Length: 368
Image (cartoon, rainbow, N blue to C red; front, side, top):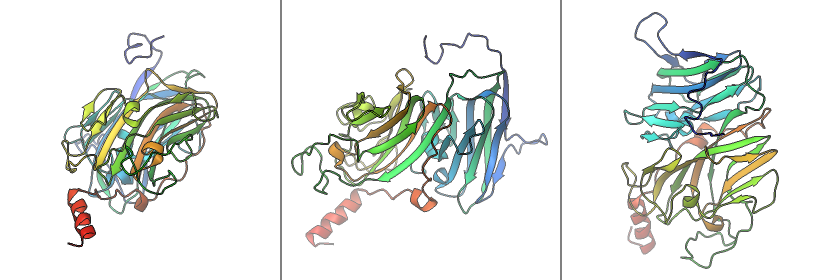
């Protein structure tokens, strides 16, 4: 049976369509809600079987890190812990608290300047659902506009899994035994890495389901190529190398030969590259890169567990500031997520640019 996006568009369904939004209940044009600093609001609550089909939102918030400090959570079927927990920016596909246009099949950030955020991920629930947004900042959100479109169904089949998404971040260090960065054997012979033990982890799951994609955000303080690290998927507790082992970061994201250009495809691409349509410097791969891949035609299926990870450079040889949001469907109950990083821990690090490199060079030469 086809799983493409238009496969079932002609099929008649026993369901009704509904929307929860921020429209002005008085009939006026104040179609938004405030979110005071330090509070959590419930955006939607549904007490019946159904499917969230579409989410759109935009907001005005004077916090410069608002896209990192507004935390989106979703709860399904009376589970106490969330199945979705992520900063609003990274969930929809914008990194580092910044705004830029981005478009994929399930997610988009749209004009003006990427200020509207859109999801078309189907999010089924068997009994009930709750979607919340936390303002983890010291500044009020003055205006938050949103749509949440959903369907009511008599029931949802038992073989339909629930949507999940998890935010992770890590500042990596070289793990090849020397403690020094290396790539392309520029600084010495490569080490081997017959393990996934020190990889950057996209997600580590228990239950039955399928992995459907990831937004991956890389910040590098060096112009050296970041992407020789292999992707690794260990299914149902299998040992390394597992049943789905890749050959390099850009290969996993369906690209090749160390790309440094913006390329947008519905299923995969590079939404941001250093010095390409943004304020990052253009000096090798110094700066910020955002790549993504969705497995809609080739989901990674698991029956008991999944560990999805990627090396940070070959043999985990690079120091990088990484974050990601992984997306998957699985049965409930799902394993609780680790604690979300604190506001201070989530604060994006400044970009290290060409001028900073020049200053370090001058310091090394004693001419600073």
